[in-house]
Image (cartoon, rainbow, N blue to C red; front, side):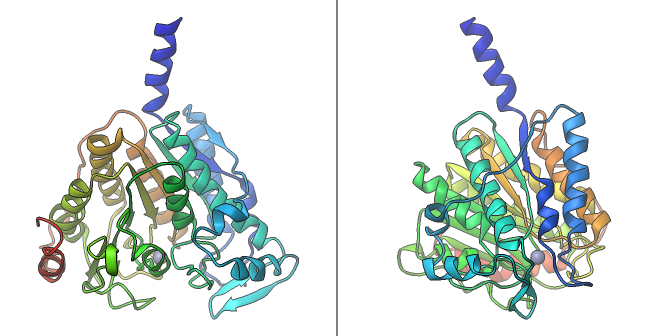
Amino acid sequence: MAQRGRGEIECSRVSVILIHSERFAEHQTPPGHPERPERAEAMDAIANRWRARGIEIVAPRAATVEQLARVHDVDYLRRIAETAGRATALDADTYTSPESCEIALLAAGAAVDAVERVMGASRSSAVALVRPPGHHAERDRAMGFCLYNNVAVAAAHARAQGAGKVAIVDYDVHHGNGTQHTFEADPHVLYISTHQFPYYPGTGAAGEVGRVAGRGFTVNVPIEVGASDEDYQTVFAHIVLPVLRQFEPDLLIVSAGFDAHERDPLGGMRLTTPAFAAMTLELRAVAEACCFGRIVAAVEGGYDLHAFAASLDAAIGALSGPPSEANWPASGIASTRGDAAVAAVRPVQAAFWTL
Ligand SMILES: [Zn+2]
């Protein structure tokens, strides 16, 4: 019996679990808004496909005030709660519908659930298929389609559960200003972002490296518009992966945005779908080496429905089944933007990491 029990644990540990609810479509945005309910329907279809392949899908619980208050002001939580039952504009492109505050609690709660599954070691990896996204949300401000900072709430929860060091890698095409600001003075949470620059939200220059005790634990990799698979492969090989390996996280959290895809209407990058599998496999390999493969991913952006679904599916595929080597697509484009990004970041971060 005991032996079979161990076998079952072994077996379940290599598989991914998905946290998702059809309720994510209930967060409504105005007509024409890119962060639209159809994105939730795309995630429903993905969840159903993975369920048919034997992957477990669980519904999220709402995040609690205690969990949210680790990264958000209590006054801000009250302001968002007061939008219940109403349609409001929180900033120029961030809106609520009557259900939004409840659905945003489920999005943050899904990220928390994903952490609990992985830190509890019942699964090696967990993906929170959620909307609204989170990485632009600041301590006291909604912005960039984001209400609560799902990934920041998840990282703070992991720390509260005993994780000594948490790494967040954000490959969304936008810089995650809210996540950076939440942890910029904290040496226990490493934030690494690859993003189009200059671009919304304007933060994320290479020189932003964190503050006080957190200096060196913010790693920004700004990349010129038009970057290809090769450019991302270059910055992963020379900056993202070496820093991650040296940090040796106890948990790796991915801000999984898919708006650096070549088809995305907001982003100006040229990533192909297989590059999202490659990036995720590279991150998984670090997690296998450092922290028993523990990875949590939470969905951020991605606004071309077809590219979003295909790339998210590729990322989940990279986390399911046995680990394998990243197979970067070869588009044949020289990595000039990647080389330029590495040349800008390396001298700044060399004060903190061997690069
Ligand atoms: Zn984005």
